[in-house]
Image 1 (spheres, one colour):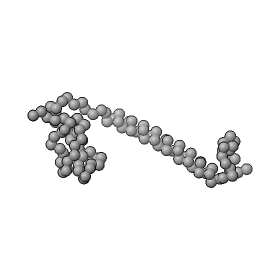
Image 2: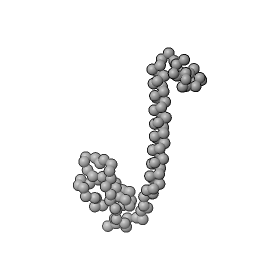
Image 3: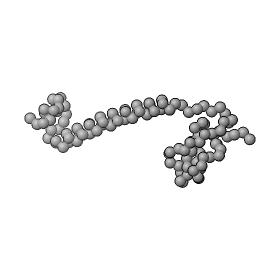
Image 4: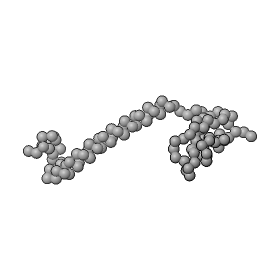
Length: 111
């Protein structure tokens, strides 16, 4: 009687190749990894859902009469530029300096 006979149920022993102990160990490690990975994904999805519910939806635009409120965006911008996101209309603009944009293409002001 091996150690596996004492640990595993008898119906599972019929499916495992007992003449290859390294294969059995590999399959066991793979099963443990998959269970842990699935648990981590479910926890991550629950945290993301809770975080989105706490932030709430973006504000609704009432037209071009309101000025944009620019916030720096942490996502990478092309060619070393700075990325800015409008907290009011959701527009995204890029600047060469660290200063916010002067206008918004998504929410233009009337002339």
